Amino acid sequence: MPTEIELKLSLYPQAAEAALRHAAVRALRQGRTRTARLANAYYDTADTLLANAGVALRVRRIGKRFVQTIKGPSESVAGPGLHARAEFESPLPRAGLDYARLAETPWSKLIAKARKRGGLVRAFTTEFERRTIPLAFPDGTRAEFCIDLGAIRAVRNGRTFRVPIAEIEIELKSGAASNLFDLAYRLAADLPVAVMTASKAQRGFALMRGERDIIGSPVRAASVALAEDVTTIEAIQALVRECLQQIAANARGLEALDDPEWVHQMRIGTRRLRSCLRLVAPHAPSPALDRLNGDVIWLAQALGAARDWDVFVQETLPPLSRWFARDAGTAPGLKRLRRRAESRRRGARAAARAAVGSPRFQRMLLSGGMLCAMPRFATTVSARESGNHATLAARADAFAAALLARRHRHLEQCATALESGSPDERHEVRIAAKRLRYVAEFFAPLFPRKRGRAYLKALTVLQDVLGCLNDAATALRIANESGGTADDAATGAVRGWVAAQAAALEPEIASAWRRFARAKPFWIRNRKGAIDA
Image (cartoon, rainbow, N blue to C red; front, side, top):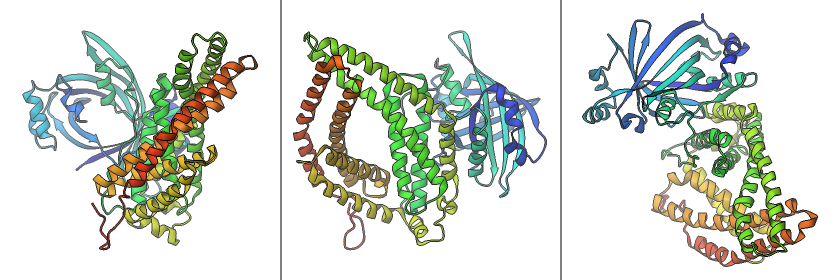
């Protein structure tokens, strides 16, 4: 099936000329710059049947020529900013749709269903100037470097709405997609560009709904489908891609909106990504991985501070303030404490937004995407000739089973501290549970679903209750940081309240551990070498 693969970056229109003249582009140029004016009409049903299925249909006018294009949903091989979609094009004698050609595509049933629903009508239009430079990379990869400047227009309730188009598309013609990321990384070092997770079609349908910018809802982690015979490195590549996609997809919402869930979900993405990178590092150390891991740690620190203040202000203080609302000795101090905490929270949120809006964040996404787009992660690392590389090339289910067994045993050993251990020892139990959970979620698709689901549910309950205990410890630290000398009563109230909440968790911790101890590991093989269902 013909597939379009392109890396998309947003940029300021004023930076277009600088992008065209950038040294990295000039070094790869393989011909003259072509300029064309492209006018496109996108079609769908009144209830956006095609868009809901991830399909986009357009008719493009290029001078006196017309081309009909239908594209399928984004494929799983795509990374942050990398759009890979099945694409079918056919020339048209005039403007309008050729249903006979559409019936020859994989979405013929969807088109037939659309016609039964009242037919396909023009949904919105785009018009832009495209300047294209053909590129040739040293390894033989061929691509086109395009800059599009124009607008998307949609009519809603009789009014025309418009959003600008200012983006770079680096379209792969043949060869390795990792080259696209490498070029984008070089551009991001000098120009104000950002990874784009939305296509023009997605932006157009958002404009029809009244959204001038695609933000949507906070994006949660998704399970990654893994083939039974997938190698370890192929599985890790797929997992890293998904983590990067979650991080990139939450960036716009974190920058634009105050909902703390954006911070929370991006922080989860960074934690999961760090967990993935830890799987590779012992077997394939490299400067590229070290730099990526350093960037992820930097981002995680900014997000972690913002998340801690969100929890303290929104979850810890409100019930405490209600309880002491009529206590004349404590209520005023709690109000002052809240004002100071709100100020610190705003500062932490601003720091997180600055991190996400920085060039370093874009370079992190692009460097991660570059590693994931390589045919083999390990071909670029220093251990590629060693026995460690054999580990990465082996089947992922064997690698996962051994890793899960080690982390399961480590959690059992740490768990002796649950009953009477120190706060630091209990924190170690939580970290062990978290690391086991991430790996179990990553590789569960390789094993029988029923047992994996039961194990993960018990592990999630354990980690959640230990997380509540950690939130209590964090709240104590934050209260000490926020309290003033005149508000000792308020700070003491927070300490007492949090200590009481932590004490109330003791039965839940014991119950969660008993439940987890009964859960059967889902990766255990029987005597015949098969994994029990």
